[in-house]
Image (cartoon, rainbow, N blue to C red; front, top):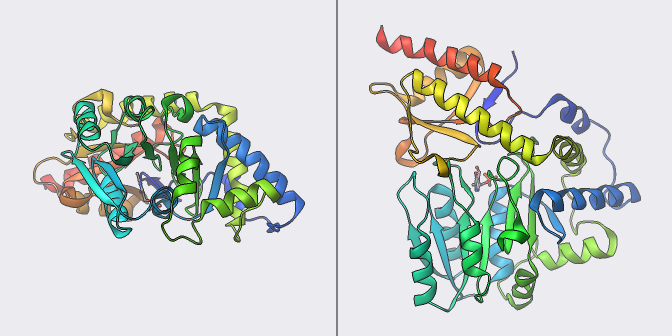
Length: 363
Ligand SMILES: Cc1ncc(COP(=O)(O)O)c(C=O)c1O
């Protein structure tokens, strides 16, 4: 049986996309590629909910996170990072590497941010030029509501930069309407593609900041990407062509289905899995349903159970891969990813395998 990935990325790549990935390469400086990238840009604009062009970088998610820092800021600029988990912390590390002055609002894992605290910091430090936040925090499953943040930053000289890497596709996202200035997403999550591509969109306000930025950059330089796209419908450097070709296929599939339908389906699957996992004795990690994301179900393993042994056992016996907890939750938490194109049937199978493995602990 083939591998089933219950991980919050990478996901299983559906057969119709795998077929495209195996096709002959086309050349990225020729007319057929130009046409393809143009169509992809239009589709990505719909996904991002923006009237602005969306750049396609050859990079994993972290590269695109770094690209936001080097393109929108200068050494010594003050920024605020809302840290609700592992990936929020990554933004802090990147900003510090580039010599930014970082204010941090750190929340206990499993919680979202407090808007009053964000507002207080922005009032106290009016020099803050950017607020970084993770839309869906993959280490905890928390979905951070972006709209109130957009309302706060919209009329200040401050950008809202969002890591939507695991949040995109499986949650509503309306970049322009919500006042988001920069959003990044990656191929290996809701897009059902292998890792290798990232997508970046900027508001007009962010493009103005890009003109002021003096941090060093070469491969990540957005201006090169915008110029190349505007002049020739190309990227400046050799892209991961096969994945770009497959991206068109995945976008057509997702947009034909409708992003709202995908979001509804994932919410339904999440609730279904939450119920089944609780019946097995797992405890939901996030109490407040309004901040639970649809990319994964974070659950605490029953007392006396080693989460690492549990996930290894169903991986070895059944080829079902489930992500474990990160940081101090390693061995104590499962993160049951539902980004792959799965149904309740696969969830039922997973639950039966978990049940079987849990029985081993009682022997
Ligand atoms: C929310 C979030 N941000 C950033 C990343 C890092 O992306 P990558 O591992 O593709 O560099 C991930 C990957 O899981 C993620 O889920």
